[in-house]
Image (cartoon, rainbow, N blue to C red; front, side):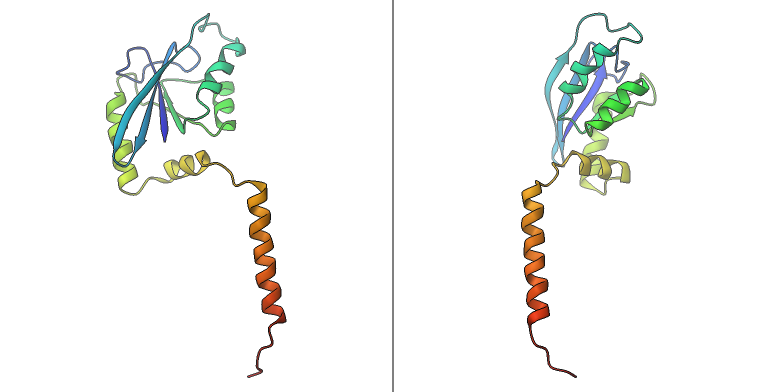
Length: 154
């Protein structure tokens, strides 16, 4: 799964989502984590009420499961959630990215907490409508065969 971090220094989770100029992205699984890329954003990011700055960030994160931030506005959080990206607020600006990554890897190896299981399930692609139809057709055929199969009375 892809995990993103709003950061000013690539060490700490210390950037507000809307104001972040850098968002570091990692791939995380049960074997460890790998740095993938730095997403860079420019322009007037500190302007409150400027909703235009959120679109490029939300779109850039749509393949991520979780984004860690120091703070986030309600509008940005809602946009991320609609894209099935879970925003998580760090406890403080001193929280280190590598510490969070290590804890995530351990959680994936053990038993992920409910919030992580939910985030993982939301990041899975939804089944295609055709797949649902095939499954339903198979179920209908099996049910029909069961109804038509004679059974001895006991």
